[in-house]
Image 1 (tube, helix red, strand yellow):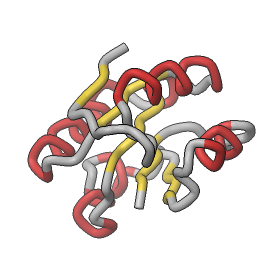
Image 2 (cartoon, rainbow, N blue to C red):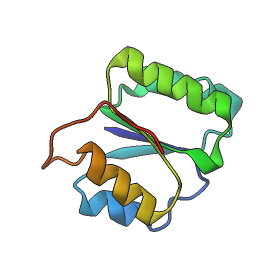
Image 3 (cartoon, rainbow, N blue to C red):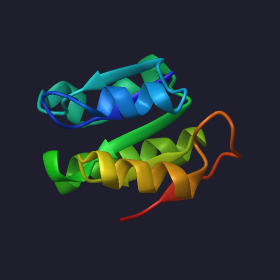
Length: 106
């Protein structure tokens, strides 16, 4: 299962994920203090993490990046836009038809 962090609503992002074969995901906004420390990563055991950088603070991003590294799961940090997410997914190979990456920074 993919963990998507940031943004109140995903909007068209849901369609991009489904088209890429990433329909099994859990979305959290990252606004609640109990979610900001990355505790969701441990409970959900995600296969990868996508974090929308324009909707979370620096500490939240650092926490999720650190936890992804500790659990050895791919981590993508991108803006909440279809174009940026598509570019990041193309570069990292997270989609089922491509090889996995470790991290993409934008």
